[in-house]
Length: 500
Image (cartoon, rainbow, N blue to C red; front, top):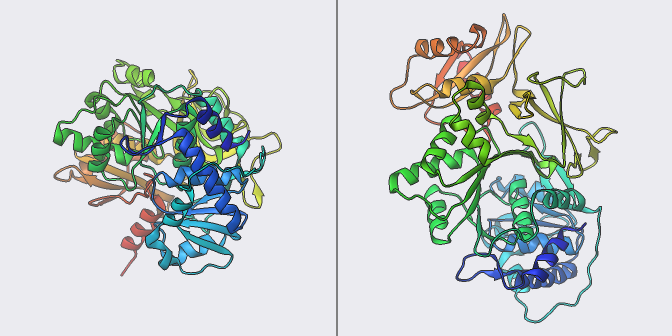
């Protein structure tokens, strides 16, 4: 199935329902399709085999996504926050292509070999041509739909390939066609170059829900848009949610029209989600765990699970709030040990996933095995009731004297201390043990002593998991999708500890 068919279906079924933008000036689904057709005809004349996108969120993004799909050209949204030299280098990798670029970035990018750079204004003007477009476009099943470049924290960014069948399989298996009520609206504040930004476009359109894009996230702007636009659904990353709650508590706003908030993209601190559940009891919260290579969500901890966990009397029930729920019915998930053997309940290992939505493919390289399994490089376990717990990237595991330790487990314990606002745990080089546990603390008010924090951890975990290296900072480094930049922090700590 083709991604552009998702728009065709909804435009035929609900042509006059609002699809994109603000209530006062939004586009209907039929108008969105008409603009995508005109955009595709224009892009076809400009040439190239790919369509790149460099810019902020907004209605131009979904139109460009579907226009590229109609042409059977891979759509490649790029990180506009990169330094100009890095962005030009990444843009060159999409050649031969046409790149739709925000107006204020055109001059900065200059000329890139093999890339025709057009401004967003020119693109939007081409979309607004009156009349129908009778151009005929390709209908494909297995061609590439989207290219998403990884952050490149350990080297050159890799281009993850998502094919039409991967994305449409995910959409159809997780969303009911036209399942949204008229008047529902989703606020999208994740950037276009993140898988959540792409999946929000596809699932929002298929469900018939209006999409409102926030061009740049601020907690005040998010709350204001939610109130003014009658937002009913939203997806945020953990760092966003904490800042949104701060604004709600300050202003007294309760978001009465909000029905559901999903979160993902990073580890959610338990105090933050507990605070959200108490502050917004009328909102359904869901934790969605997924990867670029899996076309978004692998598993979901749903609203009922959240409520059961928050009111649970036993430790096991409370612990479930730290899980990412159960795998989607359309997917298979296994936990394997380092030898590739499947392990039993509550046994740690690497998370493997298989299903139609799983790409497991990069430009020039497939990383799924012969049976279709994709190794996520995430560590975790599945409990006896089938709930998946993600312990973090395997690259981040601390190996102390042959013992593997999950930073997330230690972080969760430290976050429970009233004097800790945020924390990162990582491995520090050690001559005796290979690595030792280090903790970087963002204090809540006056900083607690390291002895107090060490005793706090020792009372709840084994003594070997007590950090031996401590540091205090005003803030921790996160990327714009809410992931802790642990490697950056590790390098900074190493530099701070280096002899003068």
